[in-house]
Every structure is written in structure tokens, then in C-alpha cells.
Length: 291
Image (tube, rainbow, N blue to C red; front, top):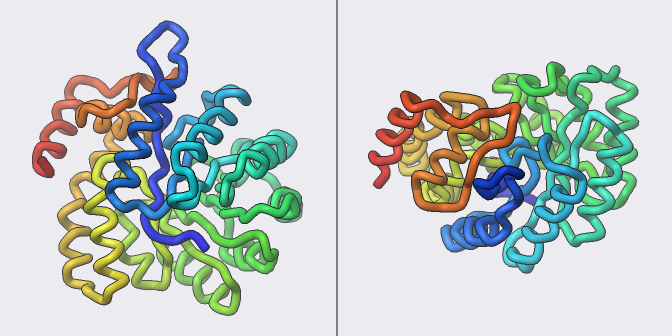
């Protein structure tokens, strides 16, 4: 259902005292991504600073994204929360606004038990919109084990997982256990996209694609065409960019990279702070190699 290069888009803010949303900038960035062939758009994820958006801002960003995309590619809205009631609110809003699916991070901070996780995701999937489970232990403090993901995949509306555990063995086990399901395993780490696709994964929800969408798409399409040598060459060409996206907490580096490219970005909101001078200089050098 959802495959290919799916940028987790940044949320541009204005450089004013309240850091208001920069909706024209969001539109411009989305047009750039679509012009470069991406296969979907993912607003309001971790890269979109969803944790600092108000309810109203969150829904405004999703609505604006859907309006700009206008059906050209799928829109998968981030609707997760550590509070199930909030996740239900966001998911209902995304469905009503016309999102094609939702990306739902596992509840952070709470560390729910297994039955709580199953009930949480089942409640959201029962809202009758395609759900992609998001496993990112580095942010949530809790890994979703393969057997749990395999169990969740049996729900007809739980259509995939964004895997950012970094554990290739775990990812392989999920793919193995869902071969008989209409279920997609999507990379949540740009630098693992190639190996995950080699195992049977279906693409990437990408940070780096905000900066180099054309090269990311070229890697994916070369792989799908069986030109593995070209895909691997592009993987290694992009490897310095992948690393540079995590020289500080995401999305600090990617917002600075987008800004250095002359696109809409603006500041990050507290408690994140802007990239320091030394790291900005390193980032400039990496970007120059692609120019």
C-alpha cells in the first residue's frame, strides 16, 4: 500500500518570537519533493517536531499537506502520542481531513505492557484508516519485539511498520513472520534502507530525502529494477549525508541543511536548540559535495 521514498517532512517555522507555522514554506518544500519523484509525504512525525505542535497546529499541518499534495502521492500523517486519547483525536482528525494513512509511534515514556500496546494499536486501527506502527526505541525507551509486530499485522488496518530499531535481525524476523500478510516493513533509518530492501522491505520513511530526494528516489528505483550495483553505489554516495543528519538530535541537522539549501526551515522549537557553528561547518562541507 505504501512503498518507496516517503520523506518525513520538516515543519517550517517563522523566525519570530512565537515561531509561527510557515505554511507557504511548507507548500514550497512539498512541491520540491514531489517534483523530485518521492512516493509519499509524511507530515507531523518526529522530524516534523510533532511533540512541540499544539493540537491546532498539528491538524493545520496535516490539512495543508493534504491540500498541497492534492492526491498526487499518498499522505501518511503522524498521529502518535503517549496518551491513547490524544492519538485517537489526531487519528480521527487525519482521517476526516483525508489522509491516506497514519504513522503511529509506540507510546513513549509510559512503557506500556504488551496487552496495553495491543489495545492501543487495535483501538486506532479500528478507526478504519491504514496504520503504520512506528518502532523507534531510541525515542520511546521501549522496543516492539517481532512477535508483537507480527501479531499486530493480523489486523486488516495495521498495514506496516516503520522499523528504526537498528536491529537487522529483528527486521528480518518481522518480514519472515508477515510474508503471508499484506504488510510492509519500511526502513526508519536512511542508512539501513538498502539492506532492509534486500531482506524484502518496501522503502524508507526518510530524513535525508528532505535534502536529496532525487538521489534517494534513484537508489530505490534502481533497486526495484534489479540494478543492485547502481543502488549500492548511490547508497555509498549518500552515506556521508545519512551520517550528517544525526550529528545532533533529529531534526536539528536536517532543518539546518534545508535552510542552507535555500528552502523553508526556520528554527527548531525548544527544548531543541539550533546547530552550533562547528557542526554547521561540517554540514556545509557534506552538502557541498552533492552540489
